[in-house]
Image 1 (cartoon, helix red, strand yellow):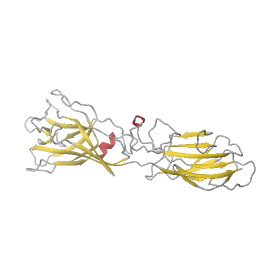
Image 2 (tube, helix red, strand yellow):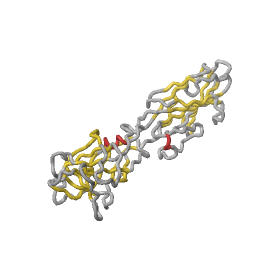
Image 3 (cartoon, one colour):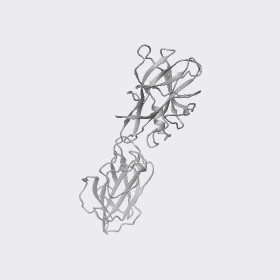
Image 4 (tube, helix red, strand yellow):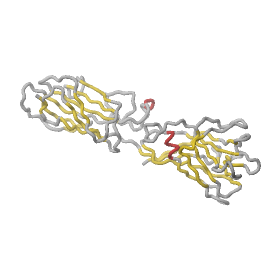
Length: 339
């Protein structure tokens, strides 16, 4: 489990009737609630700098802010909604604030009370943050980031409210994201042909099982067949995907090229999972040093282990004694014999 903070980028507050209040002094506060004298309503939108690097799954997200003053009630209520339209930090008087949505909203009561209302709060807004996340992250909605809007949940009937410290103060609001990082898949298991086996077909079926420590679904795999162990001149090199290759479920792949009898062939498999958008290539901290020059995609993935085994196709149907399994850096290297 890991955590990171999303820092605030802009904030202000809006009145639904006239003007706006931008605070003042060295520790400005933004109003949230309803005026007890003229019925004006204040709302405080905050926007944050989002960063999805290394995020595999979102565990939780909390909105952190410090309250300031309050009026007409010791325990004011709050509603936090996801903003759904753009807004500016210094609007002209009478400018309407951003629209927002009730989907994923959270509400409650600020229990600081007098005289200790000036305190930090951490409110769970996991559903709102997931809505901003890219769809490659489970639960991600890829919604535009217009920030959140703090409101009173009784602004239509009550004449009370509270204040929250603005970005210009010494008490910046921020979001704490708790998440899991994504690790590279394990080397796929080569099921068949097994080392030392005799294979009759010149277009054999290769069978392997993808493996991921977190149980993630694989999105691509690449297999190669070559008569050189260094794979310098593959007779077949194919990338398969995008697709959904279930962790722990065996995959069959038929070699389409006709292999020559009496020739030794090697094959290997690489699997990976897709996590980020293509424009993150080169910036994904989860990309591993295992990347092979064999495959160059403008895709964001976890390049994985390379596996190999040797296929010898003798001209006569009789077993040939060959060494068994060998462990190499990128996976398993084994031999088999075909007739």
